[in-house]
Length: 467
Ligand SMILES: [Zn+2]
Image 1 (cartoon, helix red, strand yellow):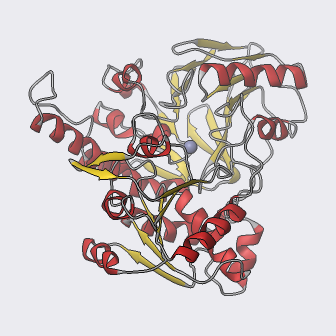
Image 2: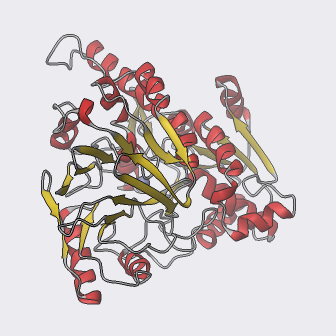
């Protein structure tokens, strides 16, 4: 008998962890950190619901921390097996996991210094060193549908999911898992990309399968029709007219590269003047190199730009600041320039140093290009605060605030249906995961209405027997 159980990424978009068990073997798909609400974050600290030492292998769909950030904890608690992921995902994890370890250490440090801890001293969930140890478990595989052995009785194949670089749909084939003694195929969509997103390919069609787990982040919403490049050009023209700088807080991986791609395109088409572009984030600089090297992930347009010997992620007058000194030098610049810096929700990082200069400047423009979660500085500014506290200083907000809504790395519910249309036969059961409860339920409804399949939105801890 084989089972599938749900230990995260259900009822929430974070903490993704799905466990497949068959014939005494256990394989975990994704190993994400819970984020956001306190009761969710506390799960990161509880004993895991399965013994890490008993797992035979882990499979990762993509590099985002809500799918991978618990891995170093798992290793720290005794997991000693291989971690399979696409080559692009493995490259990004080499940046992301040590950074996540550093953040955990800084958090513990902060709690200790401010007496915010229940147990003395506060300990990090894991350290940068634990994260580096985790990297030695990585087994990079091709993202092209080739099947690899995961452990005895389990094989898996990875295909492009079009969400961020390296993101995969993963098909797991389990020998003898069915009631009839035959094998069963379980497909994990991971996070599914938005069709026609620049740089990365569109999601590959779903391969035939018995069970399917599909994400539902936007299960109850549709994306705005707005074309981000047009809005961006408009805002840049306005900024040029008044001669002020532009600051764009952006995630270092994914969104920053998308912005560079669009700005380069607008410059090439003569839709905006050539302006100084400053990328101030060491992680964004490394991620951009990984994006440009990962040939198997590029869409046709990207390949055709490369064939013209143009760097798709370099604008005409661009400087990347990696060191602290390079970053400081950017402060002396004057006039209209575009500064792209992390973090995307202004929760930390170099973007805060720029914000202290930009926010009080009436001529400056701040552009939001991503979701701003409740409780972040980004959200307070977006909600219209006239003053925010940054590094213990009160900073007045006098600059222009703009928002571009057309960016997204996730398919909306129509995009998910479009992807599911690629299935030639009805699966035995569909699970809607990776969504807030209303979104997961709405996505299940859309699938039922459209295809008439068996669909459910699983709950935390639910165990499902494969037939
Ligand atoms: Zn993701």
